Amino acid sequence: MDFLAEGLRRAWDLLVTGDSEVYGIALLTLRVAVVATFVACAIGLPLGYFLATRRFWGRRAALTVVNTALAFPTVVVGLLLYGLLSRRGPLGGIGWLYTWQAIVVGDVLLALPIAAALSAASIQGVDPRIRRTAETLGAGSWRTAWTVAREARFALAAVITAAFGQVVAEIGAAMIVGGNIRGSTRTLTTAVALFTSQGDFGMALALGFVLLAMALLINVALQVLQGRGSG
Amino acid sequence: MVELRGIKHRYASRVVLDLEQFTVPRNGALAVVGHNGSGKSTLLRLLALLETPTEGQVWFDGKLVPRRAPPALRRRVTLVEQRPVLFRGTVRENLEYGLRLRDVSGSASAGIIGDVVEQLGLQPLLERRRDELSDGEVQRVAVARALALRPDVLLLDEPASSADRAAAGALYRALAAERAARPFAVCIASHQLEDAYRWADDIRALAEGRLSPVTPENLFRVELPPGDGVKKIRVGEVDFFVMTDRSGPAVLAVPPTDIFVSKEPLAASARNVLAGRVTGMAVEHRGAGVHVRADVGSVELVAAVTAEASKDLGLAPGARVVFSFKATAVQVF
Image (tube, rainbow over all chains, first blue to last red; front, top):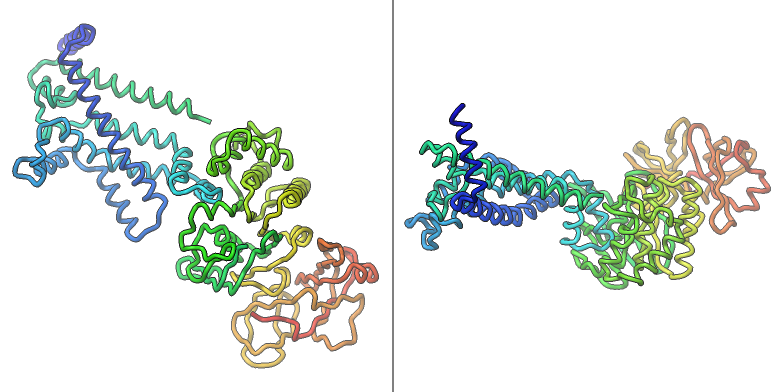
């Protein structure tokens, strides 16, 4: 138990003294998470709406694929992406391996199924008469989609939170395609793994607290937004 | 105004609507009556340009509507569905929804909303949200939301199904006032024939997705035996004599205007003579005719008579009555 107490003390010192390495890692993690969540939701939410509202050949198969992708192991995604981005890989030319952009791509691949599958389920939960009513009043496709999304806003906010949670807590892909390079691609999760393996529990705990605080802040912010839009 | 030509509309492989021709005339008031599942709602969705018929054409204002009707054209028709829903937000925000889509805002929007709110008595509900309204109030708001858009064609699917008689009356009066101020076409689907007779210029009956020659009360689904000539067909607990060469499943239709109403059985050529009691009376919207509903041996039939004939015969609910019609008057389809 002593090492835990010592770790907590160390974590507190690092956080209150504004340790530049801790805050650097936290900022990079936040940047990666925000960009990846935004991209995943920008693609995943419309895809979810499409899967929920359109009847087309192969829809059931598409939903099965998206739902299966929810359980994709992060290291497998990292491995596949590594193969694509490595110098000999088909996308090696863009030079993204071991950059924060590579981590974003990996995180998008992991968060996209969450955004698509859960938003499809959320939209399916909206009374179908809402969509029909918007159409009867003259709404075009985009306006109709917006009207339906407004009805499902609580569920969709939960989808965004879940996607953010996946991205911010993910380690496999970040480790493989990011490389955990100090000052460049070291994220909170990869750093926690590294410092734990080095026996620096204080640093690992400090970063763990930052990770928890970040998740908490994002959730509180989303809840405040939901509260403002309620009614 | 809106015309359907050669329509065959299918869901999966089942034909749900089969119409040679159906027109909602410009500024006309049309009622479509029929039982649940007769195809009324599908018909309204086709007229609202929200669905494309599997086969056939839709014409609007003399022009062929493309397979995917452009929003500008769709906005000239508005449909209020049966069991309508309101969007999240207040009644006022709901009334503004369609106006905003048409770039009407500010004082213009407030003026239009003020008019419909007054006509439908919605003033006390304006700032309420959908979960604070009864079903009847939601229905009235939905009609107001459609009226505010001032469409060329207004389609209403059972608009008074959740309203009490007083609210339904207010709704029809508001429609009449709005049409007097600004003519537009209305097509209402209803199973309440009395309402339809009271205000519609023209009534069409739908049965099994097809236009029926008579109103839905006098429609009977039967199985016809093979052979030609006059057939005795069991309907409920009475027998109908029908002249037809058709066999197999069919619908029998007895036009209300082809039924003779008398106090005693007539010595006449009519093969169908059915005695019973009057169960209801409905005055037609022009006041000249009366629809007499009678229970004749477990079957309910409606006959159309003039107001004078009804008075002479002393027809009233509970009165004994005899309905007579010829075997050739029964239509088979």
